[in-house]
Image 1 (cartoon, rainbow, N blue to C red):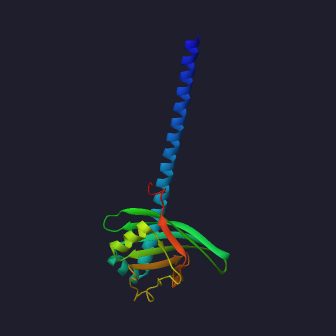
Image 2: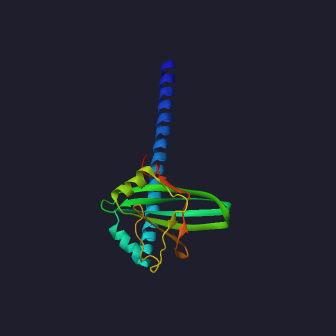
Image 3: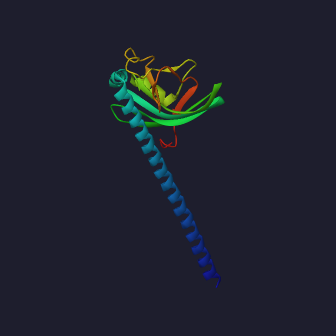
Length: 193
């Protein structure tokens, strides 16, 4: 009788263990699917923003043609005396198509009330500038500004320190948008580690 009880107990423990392992595998599959869905959504938003910018700005189109790679971020900034925001994006090496998914965050103090959704597009002049941005992250220092996006204002746009930066809102392309205090870094979850 004791043998049968031990056998039944062992079988029950094995079944329980199998159920836990199966549940963990389901959770991992779901996480993998969630990450894949998030990457796909980021890619779609980035492509749409890039297409819009290149369609509306000859200067941007020229810099894109000369660039090693680009990055596009979709951001939301909220201000109630103190401002803060966050978003996500992707950096793409043009030749290889390699993608690195990233996050951004911003904060500051100033006069303001409300929220603003916008995209920031970076063009990287060299592999070194691109790799540094992706591997080390980047922080926009005080006074950092995104370039004007309209055709007339962007005729003279050039790379500065290996970067050209554009900002677009739902209302259209913005001139001289202040991006100071914004940090960009790798999204470990979406890049697999």
